[in-house]
Length: 341
Image 1 (cartoon, helix red, strand yellow):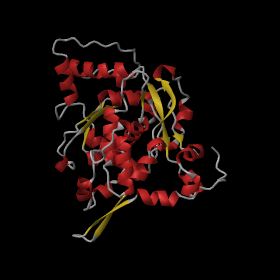
Image 2: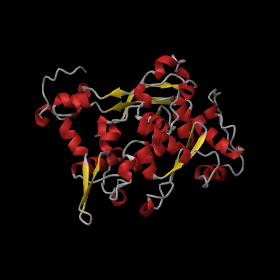
Image 3: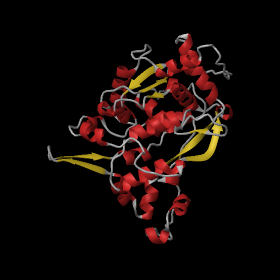
Image 4: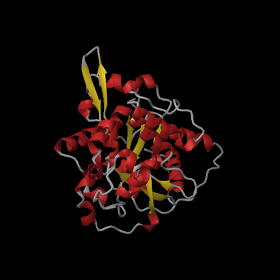
């Protein structure tokens, strides 16, 4: 995994993005892909999760109020034209909390995600092997039934473009409760964010469907709850002095030993903790996940897309990248693949 994932060091700030030709932009059907059934699901999900009123306390706002007891927090916000980033309908405290985070994100660059290239893998002759390695089967003797987990393959295949305004709105309002009761992950609401001026509060099983890691039918499978509860959600199992490699080592060992990991937890934790980091020279990564979420929730429409700056496209893994990662002789990669780099 390690270097195969990650973000390309080609990025832009929001200020550098030019006005798009929207007819051309929206003609990319894969940005808002999904058949009739998926569109129906998105509509139902939107109806169930959209809310401009709070139904649960927002820890993000509570933390802001705690830090701002003496009204000492200040921020310098760049002008925004997109209504989604103005939060006019919100109370003063909540708007300030979001604006503070937005001000820290506005000058960050946007990383370009790399997406799995299955045609490339097929050219090397290990596509089927890779798919099989990432597939996990859970057999429950009590039912004599099998549940198959394809979430690794699906996560690596997410290939949505990045819309900067969506990314900024999402990360300015995102909260993930890592202290959620792990024995009740099926029902506990632990993920909160705003998109297109709507508040969303989701459980992990809901976010796995939104991200496309599992289908609704798979989540309704009688073994899913048992399987989901057994998935590993952190990297404490691997002792490593290399802090930056600890999670990579854990995930690699989980794959090699066919142990299930909760990818939904890992992705959301990454989005909340690492993706919008505000350190100098850092980039906002994983924006394609935000587009995936917005698309499922039914926001990827002409009227909404026209409000945005020019989208940032993803990039596929290349044969040159694989050549750097894998030993051709030991991994039986073909010396002449005929695949362009």
